[in-house]
Image 1 (spheres, helix red, strand yellow):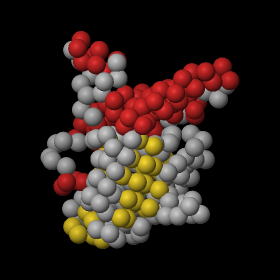
Image 2 (image 1 turned 180 degrees about the vertical axis):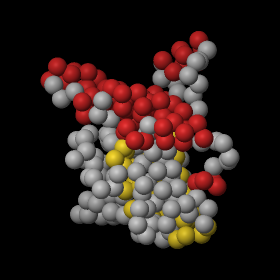
Image 3 (image 1 turned 45 degrees about the horizontal axis):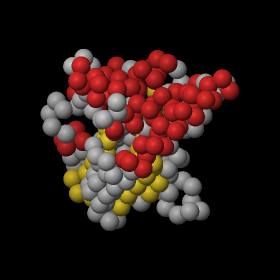
Image 4 (image 1 turned 60 degrees about the horizontal axis):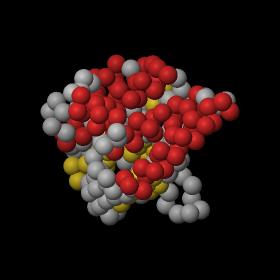
Length: 237
């Protein structure tokens, strides 16, 4: 089936893109823009560690992609140090420039993502998730569309394509492409079990704010399937 993935999101390649990604992630986590003083202190201290981690990740992506000058090397090292301190506490191994805007990580716990993976907007995942290659010799990693939910313990492996709106059930092992959008797959190996995707999985209205925000900025910060996106370089060609 053609056009399983409708959008490729550009990595953060400007200050405006950084603001867009951060705002999309904030909406995904339902964090209020205007916080009370106590909550402001909490977020400033990094007590909400998942959100704190994601903010650091986005800033690291921005400086990696947009600030190659040696002048910024100390600050990039500082960001890397802070991320490395959080990784063992949270269990996250997430490289730069992999996730599109609107990332939502629900819980602490092992999440391992291959640097060659490319994951779209509004991705929601829980814990014990592995998105990577099938074998050590095979460097290909998944390409995952927008609005995908990945359940706890799921493994998505190899150079496969996961269509927009897919729900991947807990403890599933996905090693074959899913080209039909808006379906649910589960099992080991995973197979289609329902014609309902995330459009039915998420409660009505739960993701409307995020979907509307991302859609409003889609033309500016994404590119279509006819162009290749450099995952690590931060720019499209």
